Image (cartoon, rainbow, N blue to C red; front, side, top):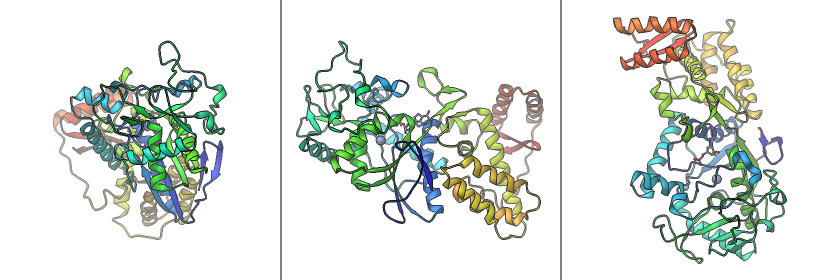
Amino acid sequence: MHLYDTKAKSVVPIVPARAGFLSVYACGPTVYRDAHVGNMRTFLLPDLIRRAAEAEGLRVRLVQNITDVGHMADDTGLGDDASRGSIDEGQGDGDDKVLAQAAREGRGALAVARAYEDAFHRDLALLNIYPADEYPRASESIPLMIDLITSLMNSGHAYVGGDGSVFFDARSYPQYGELSGNKLDQLRPGHRFDGGVDDSKRFHADWALWKKSGPTRTQLVWDTPWGAGFPGWHTECSAMSLSLLGDTIDIHTGGIDLRFPHHEDERAQSNCVTGTEVVRHWVHGEHLLFEGRKMSKSTGNVVLVSDVIARGFDPLALRLAFLSNRYRQQLNLTWESLTAADTTIRRWRERVAMWATGPSAALSTDHLEAMKAAFADDLDTPRAISVLRELEKDSSIADGTKLETFLAADRLLGLDLARDIGKAPAVVEITDEAAELLEQRRIARAEKQWARSDELRDALAALGFAVTDTADGQAVELI
Ligand code: AMP
Ligand code: ZN
């Protein structure tokens, strides 16, 4: 398998440190809200790596963390302005994403965190993403973090700052910046603190490993040798990954925005504490836009898996839409592309069910190998999908062969293509009212009035009919 390695800035062969076993650490969710479809695209990445590796006979161990403390509102937002270089972080309750949400919901912080963690697992299952082998929670890994920080202090990489927090001494790690390109001499002081100077730390690019808590913080606080406080987000991933996967980790994944400062800082911490290059390959997924815009709460442009389902789509249509684009290309998802993916996935399932009523035949190794090769080639999933489309269309290939090849391919794709096997096609009795709406929708689509077509789909859903668009026109099922 080959993958694009962010640090090497090129596609490189992935050779596991331990023959036959691939270790993967995936940065997981911050559990203070439902994951949006962009987050889900990033969470699909380790699943695709796992499937590609398993197709090559590797055994995969995947660890994905749950961030339930320490991710501050300020930790992100650097994405568009990486040169800013402010890695300052606040200390108050309001800045910790989980605590801020707990205050909004009037519930305890851990109750909120567990509720969104459950939602995260439900969303993963809806997208056929295999569960990780372990999901360590930051709030339950505090002793590991204290050990890590103690060790960094003993080796001169960390110090207690003027405000009682413990900081990493960025200048103690000369390789800082190799991952993201943000070298220390290019990072300018941040602007977060009014007055411009944060004299609690020695150097503006140092970051807090452990934050001393203020008097207002009553939850998610732990006692340490340096007083009461809570961990920095970057500390969590170093501590949990080293503890569960050891000093050598084959692949570390995350969204592209995590490259800096999260992963740059994590690399410095992990490498300094072990004295070795811990992560062999950093692999980042590009961002998802929705209808051409960044997803953000402030503009009301956030789409959840539940929104996709509410529109009558199969959630695996989302997975197919992701697979139709390579992970490291920015993807502009639209309702129209989801409609197309939904139509395709339903048609494939129908075809598979139909082929399954006839005799089986040996699968087409050519097609299957071509798909595996596409996955192994830096997860070229669009190419894998087009191989499947060619197979579907090829009238010289027996239906039994198509059936077996589709089923084998689904181990890579995870689209649940066998779902309709054995199901008798449902006979749907359409009411006059629904028939009228269907006719209006047919006309709207012929006139390319997509918004109107979507409205009519919703109106039909309200009457209990799910409509999908196939090559032969609209197909109707009971919801
Ligand atoms: P969070 O729950 O905010 O910590 O984010 C979880 C993951 O989603 C991180 O790896 C982010 O890099 C990633 N992510 C955030 N926004 C997007 C987006 N629009 N498209 C793809 N991935 C994203
Ligand atoms: Zn992380």
